[in-house]
Image (cartoon, rainbow, N blue to C red; front, top):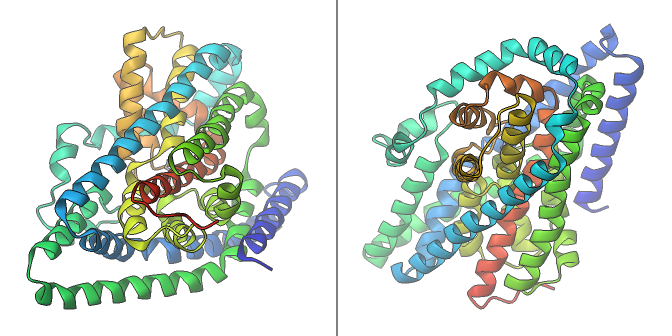
Length: 422
Ligand code: ASP
C-alpha cells in the first residue's frame, strides 16, 4: 500500500472516530482520557519530529541550493523569478478572496445574538492575541530583523525567525560560491551530510504519519464545535470556495501554462504533500515532505527544491493571504465598518505582506491578522468570532500554502529547461 493511501486511511479513521466521540461521548471522562493520554501526545510527538528537523533542513538545503546554482547572476535570475511568482500569485489569491467576500457578504448573515455569544465566549483568547499582536513588531523593524545580529539566537528561540534563518543560509550559500573551490568543498560535503541525515530522520518520522495524522485529526474533530460551522456557515463557505478556486483553478492554470505539466497528474503526484499539510496545519512541518515529493515524484532537481521550497514554506502563503482578506472584510461587515476601495487595497497589500511574514505553524498568521484588523479600524477583539473555526480553515489554507510552493518550484524547474517527470 502506498504511503499516501496509508495516511489517507489514518486521516479518515481519526476523523470518523473524532466525529463519533464528539456526537455521542462529548466531554465524557473516556474521551478526555483518550485525548489527554493518547491523541494529543501522539499528534504532538509526530509534529515535533517533523518540526525539529526544519531548522537544519532549511539551512542545509537552502545554502546548498545556492551553492549548487553557483553563479550569482544565475542565482539572481532565479531569485527574482521566485519572489516575483510568490508575490504575484499571493496577490491573485487575496483578490479572489475579496471579490467573493464582497459578493457573498457573509457578514450580513451573522445573527447579532451569535455575534455577542462568540465575542463573549472567546474574549479571553482574543484579548491575549491582541496583546501578542501589539507586541509583534511588524513594519520597518521586521525588515531590520531579517539581518540577525546573532545567528545562534535565531534557532534558540521557541519560535525561530525563519526569515532571518533564510537570510543567513542565503549568505552562506553565496559565500560558498565566492571562496576557493577546494575550501568550499569540505563545507559542502558537511552540508550534504546534514541534509541526508535530516531526510533520513524524516523518512522514519513519516512511517509514523498514518498514526500521527489519525491522532491529530482525532484531537481536532473530537473537540470541535460543529454547531459553530453552522453558525458561521456563510463565512466558512466563502473561505472554502476561495481556497477551492485557487487550489484547483489558479494552480491548475499556472501548472499548465508555466510548468507545461498536466494539472491532474500534478495533483495526483502531490497528494502526500496535500494530506500532510491538511493534517499538520503547518507549512514548516510539511516542508520535508514537500521537498522529497517534488524531487521524487515530479523530478525537480535538488538545487531548485533546495532554493525555492524552504523560502516558500515561510514566504509563500496563498491560502493564508486569501483567508486574511476574507476574514478582515467579513469582520468589517459584521461590525458595520464600510471599507472604501482604498482601505480594501490596504487589506490586499497587508494580507500579502503578513502572509510573507507569518510563521508556517498552526495559526501562525492569526497574530498578524489581528494587526491588520486594527489597521483598517475593525475592532481587533472581533477575531473572537472566527477563532472557533480557525483550526479547520487553517488545515485547508495550509494545503494551498504548500501546493503553491510546489507549483513555483515546478515553474522554476521548467524555466531552467528541466523536463518534469511524467
Ligand atoms: N498554518 C499556516 C501554515 O503553516 C499558517 C497560517 O495561515 O496560520 O502555512
